[in-house]
Structure formats: C-alpha cells, structure tokens
Image 1: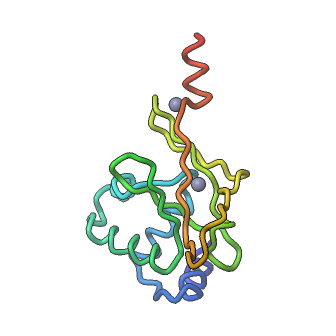
Image 2: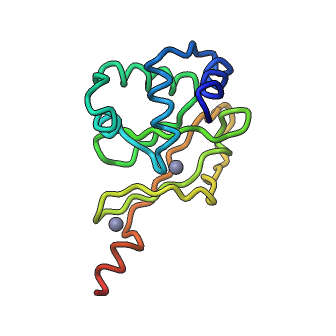
Length: 143
Ligand SMILES: [Zn+2]
Ligand SMILES: [Zn+2]
C-alpha cells in the first residue's frame, strides 16, 4: 500500500487519516507478525509517544482495521485485518506462540475453527492461540 492507498483504506473504515494514524498503519503493514504496543514504540524510536500510539491502536481495533490477539503474554498484539471486505471471524487465522523464544507466528492457512454456539450468542472475534515449541527452537535442541 502506498500513501494514497493507506489514506483510502482508512477513509473506507471511517477513519480520518491523520499523520500518526498513517505512520502506525505503515508499521503494521511492514510487520510480518502481530506486534505489540512496545514493539511499535521501539520501531518509532520514541518519536511517537506511547499514549499516541495506543490511541491509534484502540481506534483501529474499534474500527476493525486490526485484529487484537491475546497470546497469554501481558501485552496485546495487533495485526492488520487482511479480510477483503468485512471484518469477520472467517478472516482470522490461528496463531502459534513458542514457549521457548516467545515468538508469535501467523498460521495464515489455518482459519480459526468456528464453533456452534447456543442460540442468542453472536460471536464477533475469536482468539485462537496454540502454545508449544516452534520449528526453530526444535532445530536448535537437536544440535
Ligand atoms: Zn521458538
Ligand atoms: Zn496473524
């Protein structure tokens, strides 16, 4: 996405594209895995303060620009929603957290399973995080 496309994308989500929002959006686009507020703060080299970044993330979550992932660590992770039109459970994928290196992986090809809920419950998002050991750590163990 170029600058113009980011602007259009934000407008489409009902968000006024301010400088900060565009900056955060750019970092989210560059990230290959879900990132936390602390990660973003580091990426910005403290040129953008934590509170400002947080406000943008909150807005993005509310307007469904990002998915929020609770991986069991103390910090939430954010990743762009790659769903084509609507933000829905079917465009969420499974995440894997390595208990050894604490890295979080996107298993993009595995959709979160959709469970049959009792009548009257309307699901909005699902957090599906699998914990274990990643291939890198397994390889290291064998050496
Ligand atoms: Zn690992
Ligand atoms: Zn992901």
